[in-house]
Amino acid sequence: MFHRKAARTQRDLRPAPAPSFLEQLEPRVLLSSSVLSISENTPDRFEANGGNGGPQSATQLGTLTGDTFVGDLSIHDAADEDWFKFTITEPGEPGQQIKLFFDNASGDIDAKIFDDLQQPAIRSGNSSTNNETLSLSGLAPGEYVLAVIGAQFATNDYEMQFTLDVPRQSDFDGNGSSDIVFRDTSTGKNTLMLMNGTTRIGWAALPTVATQWKLAGIADFDTDGDPDIIFRNTSNGENTIMLMDGTTRTGWSALPTISTDWTVGGTGDFDGDGDYDIVFRNKVNGKNTIMVLDGTQRLTYRALPTVVTQWAIGGVGDLNRDGDVDIIFRNQNNGSNTVMVMDGLQRETWSGLPRVTNNWAIGGIADFNADGQRDIFFRNQSNGENTVMRMNGLNRVGWSALPTVTTVWTARV
Image 1: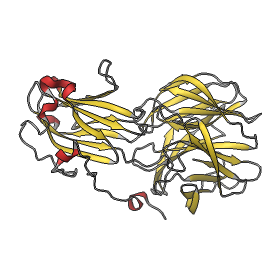
Image 2: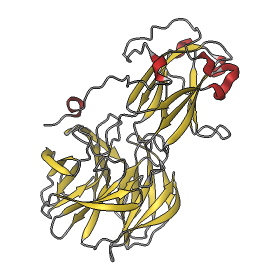
Image 3: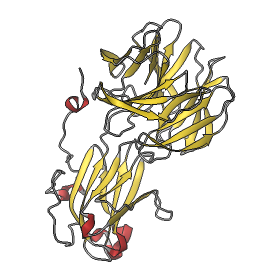
Image 4: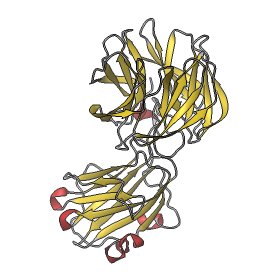
């Protein structure tokens, strides 16, 4: 049986330094659970990156990949501000974040991320705990500015962890490839088709779930690095999450009940807070709404534009790589497909996709060939064939066939 913690390669969090900034990071110390050892608020080695220089003197961190730790930092006096510039080359995903560690009792530290210094911060951390976490989820590729300041003119020492090495949304065995969940609608059995790109490498059985429950979606709701699975009860409208540790179920977490007129369309972080949200579609009147979540807890609902009922939601994902989660609609009568291109929680425009005959259903969106683009998984409901529409943004570039699975099974990625 696969287990993510064992399967993922353990990496030194200190990537090979770039010739510019990262050469200055030595000595770099890995994070531990021990109390920070720095005891004096003295100017740190990047002190030119604040004070009167402001953001114009920001330390250049360069392009961030994987996980990067920066230690021995300080806000050493009431006028001190630390500014950093960093670049990301892929859209931000849930779980990707910047985290500051410090002893709040010695002085509170706040942090902000800007994409335009003439505009308000796009991410802020101002809690009263021993850390501040700034989510990178929903950020488009590009350069950003990080500001670190003492709250109420406080001084303190701190450390920073940049986390970009997070698993794919449906990667259950931790090998870097998106896997596919299959559910037998006649018996309630569930299984994983474990993948290496578009090649099947094995199967992993999951717990059986009673047949009145429908396989509805996949996402890491409890942010433990393992994808979880949504089931929706088609008889009474109940919703629940099968919490996972790799390919092993660890528990259940109930979600609010929603009337059976609604179906789950998919999952994605629409509000950029680092937590996956759930799209629901009303099959009777065509209304659409987002259940905005904090972990496994509902915060609110946000309405989306109504779409006539011959269209169904096929999947959710950032197809155009702008950092915002988009929604695919599929016409169940004629096989047409279109993307509701999103700007956060608002529809921005529509973009058409190639038509696919209506014996095929969309089972979700995932990056199967590891090119940084979201691909579309199709399943033939008549003969059990499966295929991937490989994408480059909003454009199809090809097809990749997957193994056939008998039609008693439904599938999601």
